Length: 409
Image 1 (cartoon, rainbow, N blue to C red):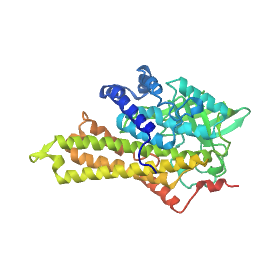
Image 2: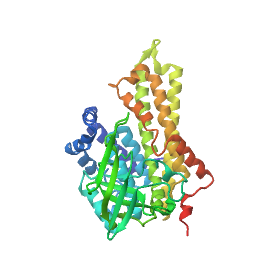
Image 3: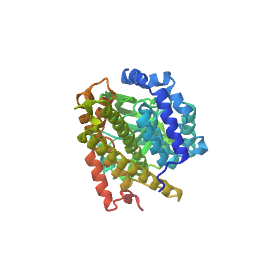
Image 4: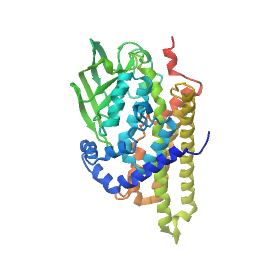
């Protein structure tokens, strides 16, 4: 593996860094986050923020080149995600879900679906996509080896002529107000999830779709999080992604794109480290900057080491996926992806805890930026499963566990 970024990747980081300095100012972040959750995305549209993301090529970074996009491989996506988290974190809400779903669509979509969605992404800066899987009582079932008949998901779709009729509910969905939801559900009520799961694309303007409640968390997001309800929602059969009852194949295939979350943790942790290092050099205690005190230096060294370790894990895993793709192999959920997710939780909370110690009481002041980063680290312990779920997933794959074995034959 070449540990140097390519010229194109370095240029992309430069574009993101420049965009962040120019557009993601403290004033802009305060203005957008000071609004009610439901008004934040409309405000970003009104301010032309999403148009600017499209104009610099970030919105279509993962759209295949034949459809006018950047066709970015997974390593490039991780490099871009890290830079966004470090320099322009607000932009992540408009990009990461769409990037992941572009990968799903490129691998499993029909030509009609690709033309519809990729052309819309390229022409409509306000168009957003999201994914809906989590349900009350079925939080991590699709992620673990829980394949008992009838378990895993309760939302159900049955076919009625040229339409699917969807009924059920989801919870903790961070994409409830996007334009298009990729909904993970059952199309067979009784079979094991690996043979009963499907993915159907649902425009959120469809009759019967509603949001039962909006969730308020200690860490506020730019896009509102909510619990959607599907009450006899009818969509064309043409909106099925892949084959009926074989959605688990897509689910496992898309797991490699979960690597974008650990990549974002690298960027956010790097920002925490740099803010904390600068504070340590500014603040004087005992007649000298606290940066020169060994107990502070140790913590900074630990933070730096954790970040570098995770960055290398993420880059190596992405590189392995991309190398396999060059040979035509589709890589599904891997030990590497799960190890990165497991480590990301530790890096997230570990850097935040050390930063809080170094900043002392000032670290809790809301008028300083570090407070939000520290709170965010502890508020996202549920990302892609709790730390223990990530450890269990890694443990299962140590001996070569393959969920897709159940699809053989």
